[in-house]
Image 1: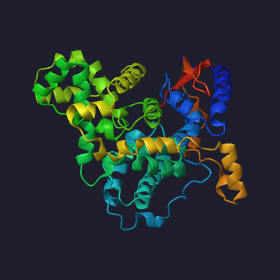
Image 2 (image 1 turned 90 degrees about the vertical axis):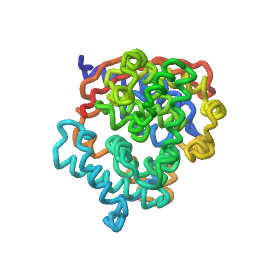
Image 3 (image 1 turned 120 degrees about the vertical axis):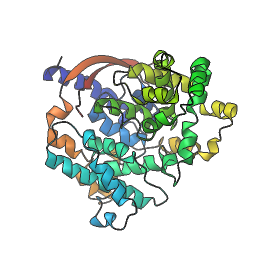
Length: 386
């Protein structure tokens, strides 16, 4: 069922004032925005995501990196591999997008990744990085995507960007201990099958972008991960395996059979339920507890060891109205441009943001003092074809 335009207008009018309350407070109420991002339904609309995502990463949209020049492609050791991966990324772009528009975005995607790697030479490209980059590019545009990807690469994704996979394997090693705490029999079955954790590798390093067929679901998970601990994708992986416990147990206890089952990612999972359960597991079995029980070494993970200081750094941000004025006072041309909007969004027009919609109700428990001010927000779940 499609939501009539007039109904969507009412929903937007209801949502915007409440969201703006927390975006325009000085400093910005980041804690409440995080709660909204991980709560039922996430950030609800792409318009709101374009405002909140940069705040979650402490990015000033009025002081963005310049668009990369042609020299960003010169003599970069990963250029050829990036080019191959970008050419294979066609399924990540919206169905029906004109080939000429997709070609422009693929060029931008290449430049976004190369620019981040140029700015941080200690980072190493990995296959799957482009799945994260394209998700950002499609929503927020090239310049904001560079800023967001740069921050994520140095924090949430940092362990995947070492010259070897040792740190990535270290993060994957948290999966089985979570399963052991929740369902010992399922854990033991997987151990007997010798399936390991490699089936979850693409889930982890692409934030599930590589395995999800609907972009709206990718965006929902990105709401969740951007506002959460860097290990949250692993906790979500654990909830997915636990959710499929009956399927796993009914499979022959054989590495190939079990790996094939778990590698076949279902598209009809109850994502809101799984997100809630992942949060509950994180509270019940935090990384520090798992590390003690299984002799993991959190200090080996740069993502984990820098997370608390990174979160603290986001708590004193000025609202966009102040940042815009400060930029104007400084004479920067960025203030005249304003926040970048995705070229893909502009090309597809209103159909992109107001396509097929199903109205659903969500409740955000929001308060500046983290108190009891609770209000209902009407959500529109957008049907984005990819």
